[in-house]
Image: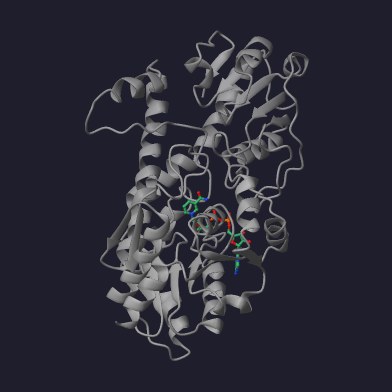
Amino acid sequence: MSEVEQLKERITRREYTVGVIGLGYVGLPLVLRFGEVGFRVMGFDIDNAKVEQLNRGASYIQHVAGHRVKALGETRRFEATTDLRRLAEPDAIIICVPTPLTEHRDPDLHFVEKTADAVAAALRRNQLVCLESTTYPGTTDEIVLPRLRAGGLRVGEDFFLAFSPEREDPGNTQFDTATIPKVVGGVTPACLTLATTLYAQAIKQVVPVTSTRVAEATKILENVYRAVNIALVNELKIAFERMGINVWDVIEAAKTKPFGFQPFYPGPGLGGHCIPIDPFYLTWKAREYGVATRFIELAGEINSGMPAYVIMKVMEALNERGKALKGSRVLVLGAAYKKDTDDSRESPGLEIMEELFHRGAKVDYSDPHLPRLPIVRKHRIDLTSVPLTEASLREYDAVLLVTDHSKFPYDLIHRSASLIVDSRNAFRARQLTGPHVVPA
Ligand SMILES: NC(=O)c1ccc[n+]([C@@H]2O[C@H](COP(=O)([O-])OP(=O)(O)OC[C@H]3O[C@@H](n4cnc5c(N)ncnc54)[C@H](O)[C@@H]3O)[C@@H](O)[C@H]2O)c1
């Protein structure tokens, strides 16, 4: 039996340890899933607080249930550590570290580079390494592979390398790690065989592709597709509004077409780790080839203008009521970027709050998932979430809905607030209308 066949057998017999580096929104559900299907699993992270919490059997992500972490801990097949020197222990290493943009909106790959260095320092024969972080086509070949090769081991023979994009959709109750199909590309055929064998143990459908570059580009296509379509409906929202047409009514009607149309919805701006960021990884790489990615740039321009549009709608609505934004009390509903999650990364809510402050408004916020605003890279607003009561709501000159969390008491807000600016069509969708409800 060839060595690759032997490794495959070890994987299917679960005599194989899976290590995951970066235990965030992507890495934590993944390490849990591999553990739950019977592998010994190790979690690696530089954040000591996360590692301690996991080893105590607790979760720090709202939609990842603590009892799953606890149950896996009790099997004694799971351990989290900050000691990257232990990377020689797992047979497979899956990398799920962040891939943000720099201040100049260029790819910031330093997390991937540092992690690849740590893996290279511990790399031993027969290890399989899979990168999952979203990135531009070529990263696995150009950034990770040279580092792993530097010690003299040969890819496809002594060690194996693949790319498999993460498609996690936090808060989505219909799909989870096990049921979201997994695209996998290997550096060599042996790399692909081992990576697809591994993922097939934990994930229902594995989709092998011809190279790591195809796998990297697949994820970028998916996110560019979302960014462009969201920009399209954001632009149409503004155009239709001038014509007295509600864009949400139009989308509801259009989506009855059984083919050739997929609904996307406008909003106060893009948020999260993916859609506002990933397309620009491609833009940057395309420049190396002398290609301009105009759709991406245009979508970015439209989407990044949405927070300013929403603020203009607040100013207009206050103006109608004889008030200036400066000095007005504004309550922002929702600081997470996405409905029913606690994730505030790149949240338009934070940008909107900062801009409202900047223009002299007195700003509060309420978010059932974020009791306190986290201090993030770009925004440093120190506020705690205010409770929503009839009395508290009456005190505001305007209430601005940014994130349409299911937990908000929409009837109470509708009854008590003197002015509601709704960037999500959440009130109208619940038949809560009136002259004090303004779309944005
Ligand atoms: N969040 C999503 O919904 C989502 C979906 C699809 C793809 N992705 C992609 O997956 C990747 C990870 O995203 P995320 O949302 O899980 O990020 P995250 O910030 O939630 O988690 C990343 C983790 O990596 C750790 N880390 C950073 N540097 C490290 C290092 N050198 N060694 C060990 N650990 C390190 C951090 O402490 C953190 O816990 C990104 O490339 C992202 O674009 C995210």
